[in-house]
Length: 147
View: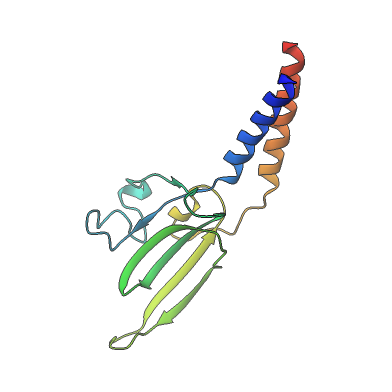
């Protein structure tokens, strides 16, 4: 009985770590850290911030990088999302603007993937599934050796 409970707990822990995505979360309009969230991270692309666990966003599976014009400002914003917003750029001109601003959205689905100047396409989930299967097999072998 204890073996089954232990194996279930290990599998659940593995699944939660595989399913919990971590993204860079920052906003260039943040007055406390105004240079922390530019289009490119400064200091040779080694950011001051680390990816954050997205468990506070319901069903978060994607990291988003939005650069250009957003929420009345210009800059970059990185965040967690439960929706795939796609990868595209558009030109935005709001009322009162003297010019058009290029605004881009980049969506990805791996830990910390919204740091780069442009985000690569979503990785297939086969690697995560393979990792869980290897962990389950290792747990089973360990349980046999313990008993």
